[in-house]
Image (tube, rainbow, N blue to C red; front, side, top):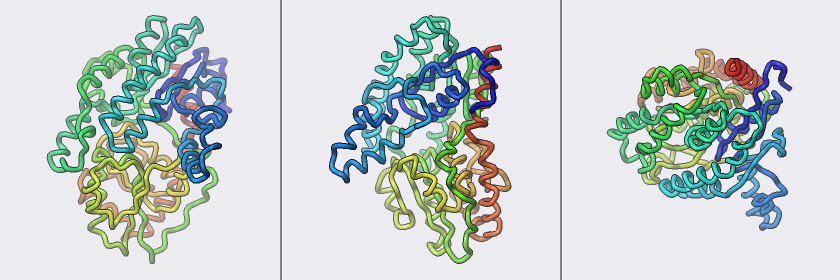
Length: 423
């Protein structure tokens, strides 16, 4: 339970997100602080409600697969009485995305967001006093309604600014154009325009890393917007990782096991990692890629013989996968934060990462890439392969570093932020 006394804070907060992101952790932190008014989301595992009851009636093999998907949205600590859910759009969006139907997925996402807003409008219009904590891409209408009701609005921006993203992707596409699906090339202008309106309506804009903040400063020189910006480090789900013991040293007589986890897209630098592993003998390194494959299959096929690929997995399976690897590699170009970095530290992995995300790596836990290209990624991987003492030092220091991103620290930071906002 939180040590921050509710006596210091009077501001109740309603959290809403039509998907998931880390919104459930925000809601749980507020619940422990005694400040959660309600939490609205599309997907929240309630075993006794539709569609989750399907896992009881389907054939066993289908029920097991369905349960594995459902348990990704299980958050036992949250009080179900404070959770508002509704609609099936999020499930439809996920199915379309996994089928590689990017445009359909985007259309369903926009439709689902509009329906989600309609569902929480009555709550926002209520006479109870509370602030709104919303997320980029789904807060514009709710914030406008909230401001009309005199509510404070907190924008949790889980990405950097998309105008900067578009410029970066255009540059990458000059060299790696065949790695992009059409949906990955650019964010539409109307989305960027909506983002600007969210910035204007928000009383505070929270981002998960200094990099994300820098993109907003670069794209929006308005002093009023910049004055609202604050970095609030995210956290990882400690309960998932608490059973892991300290990592065993990496043996010198086996390949180093590298891991990539997340969307398999050019934005995250997967092209550099695959080109790098192709230059390293199989006797020296192995690579596992876990996540939704969104690069063309024929492109991935060039490297498939050097990669163990697993589609998106249940959250509960992540710790064991990470603990069976030595180094997480995230050569991303554009990230809001990168919770996967905190999770990897908690599992005892070393890190190889860019500076375009949360600065989770330290000299004691891995390598911060000095540039983003395949040569730099290859050189960093070779350092881990050739210097096992250094690699084992990273891994031995990882779990202590992960404590800087604990849920308790996140909850404390939220309390401190709300105290500043309230005053």
